[in-house]
Every structure is written in C-alpha cells, then in structure tokens.
Image 1 (spheres, rainbow, N blue to C red):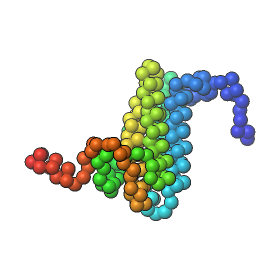
Image 2: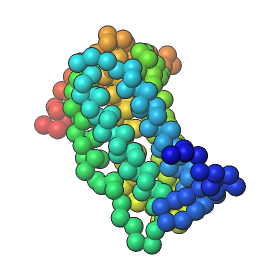
Image 3: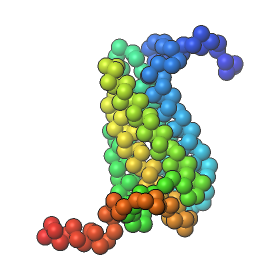
Image 4: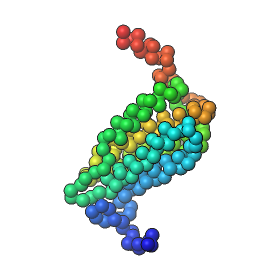
Length: 200
C-alpha cells in the first residue's frame, strides 16, 4: 500500500461527501484540530507514572473525541450523521470540577510553563482556542457545522488549563504568575467562606 495518492497535487483534498481547496476554511478548522491532537499526543509522552494515570486516560479519550469532531467538520454529505455528542462535554465538566478540587488556590493570571508536560498542555490549550475560533467563523459562513464541536472545544480549553496546573502541582512545580496581575480569581477557602456568608 502506498501512502501517497497524488490526488491532492492540484491543491484540493477530499471531504466526506465532496472535494474542496486545501486552503478552505473547513479544512483549516479540522486541520487545526489535527494539530491540537498532535500536541496532546506529545503531552502524553511527557506524562509518566501512576500519578498521571487519570490524566492519561482523559487525554486518550480526548484524542478520539477530537478525531470524531474533525470528521464531523469534514462531513459535507446531504444526510449527515455526526459522531461527537454532548456526552464528552459533560464528562469534561465533571473532570474539570474534580481537578479543581485538587488544584492549588488561584488568584492571579499565570503564564504558560512550569514542567515540560504542563507547557505542552498550555500549547494545546491555545491551539484549542484557535480551532474554536475557526469553527465559529465556519459557522458564520453559513456552512452547516455541528454546534457540538464548538461547545466541546470551548470546554476542552478549560480542561487543558486545569490539567496543566494539576501536572505542575503533582510534580511540585509552582505556577508562574504574571507579575503585573491583580488578584482576579477567587478560589481560596477564605473567599468561599465569604461567599457562603453572603448567601446566608
């Protein structure tokens, strides 16, 4: 089997149900999801040991979900059956909530970095946001695009932010705070107690 087909030598590529120019917005959107998937794969190679077993399981599931979402964006058939559902979004929300309970208090903006794996997860987070922006632009272009993909990417960027912080925390590496940041987050126990008093 030859890996090259030569069918794209004139600047077009195949979708599920059609062909378009390789620089089309649809190809740019799902191509960025492929780029994102690669960075997540890189992060997985940097996470070793039982202490990261839960994150590795998350990331493996995410890789498959990104493949599903990319396929959904590449689908231009008249009758479309999409693979990505709302269930993975709900799972991401549950995992974000669980990891936030473990994460150290956050008061200020932080800079991407810390351990190599955390830095890679931050890169993945920013590529996620780019994939989301492209997906929104594609939706505005009056193309038929499953809104689930945009919602998934929106939630995934939050997950990757929290996951990067958890990686640093488990390795004993402090977050790198933005030096000119005001206190913009309220996640400490004191703040929660204040909120509880206000509610009472």
